[in-house]
Length: 103
Image (cartoon, rainbow, N blue to C red; front, side, top):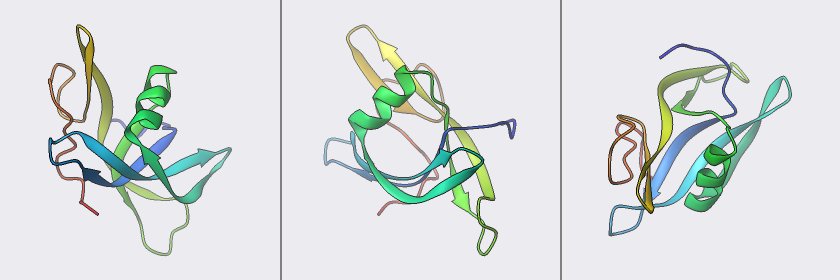
């Protein structure tokens, strides 16, 4: 993935038993820097993606402030009336952020 600008980095995810996303730990862009970890619900992430915000998965580099190891771009895959949050394919039918740690 290109290391361009992004609006948020997803560090960890929690899933419901039915494999939909419950909560996410996110670093949000705040001007030229990033926030501390904040908790997003699935709905907050979906709304942000629908509003054109760019999210990626990855992790913060220790002791390097707003420097990250970026893994994958996150997409909102729509299939008729349902949508899925995915990092692997724009056409998946279920939430999937592979390689993102669970919390």
